[in-house]
Amino acid sequence: MNQISPLAFVHPEAKLGDNNIIGPFCYIDRDTVIGDNNIFQNSVTVNVGARIGNGNEIFPGASISTKPQDLKFAGEITTCQVGDNNSIRENVTISRGTASKETTIVGSNNLLMENMHVAHDCLLGNGLIIGNSTKLAGEVTIDDNAIVSAAILCHQFCHIGGYVMIQGGSRFSQDIPPYIIAGKFPVKYCGLNLIGLRRRGFSNELIEHIHSAYRLLYSKGIISEGIDEIKNNLQITPEIQYIIDFVETSKRGIIR
Image (cartoon, rainbow, N blue to C red; front, side, top):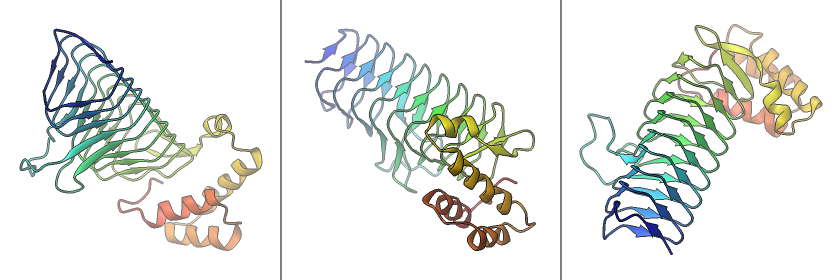
């Protein structure tokens, strides 16, 4: 049974699962689907097109599936998909998609900290930590288990690899490959995310293997030549293949 505050508004066409708590001054619009066991603290707005899973906690002032801040948006029917067990803190805004991809996706088990923004058509994976006041422009992709610190500005279309740590206050317009620390100004490769990898159960041998891949990758003036060095000199484990695929499919180029 859902617990809905008498001071909340839930549109008659909204679809709610079971055991949700909807606090005072929440607004849940039409064409929304909400699963089970979610907690909406006071003053949460769930806009048209929201698809929210199970076990999420959404804090005051958050707005989910907001109208895209894109002048090309012409009112097309799009969605914003949020997975399970996310903590979406105060004043977070997540836009729904546009005609480009038709949806914005936030995976599961993420912590989105206060006042951060996820723009239209972004694709966020699982196990992410995204810090206070960080802003993601449109169509950004973040792979699983990345840590994106506070007050970061991420250009549209960027791709952030898994298991990275990005220094707070950074701004960048190129892709950040997996397993690394990125920081300084301008943003650059600062070594492997050693602590993060060890916490995630990566062995010392595997970490050294990944480190060897980056030494080869950045040993050449041309990134494609660095990839050739990796292919010719290292055993291609799934982790190394991930690096190769990430770099070879990068559309904005990777940080150096």
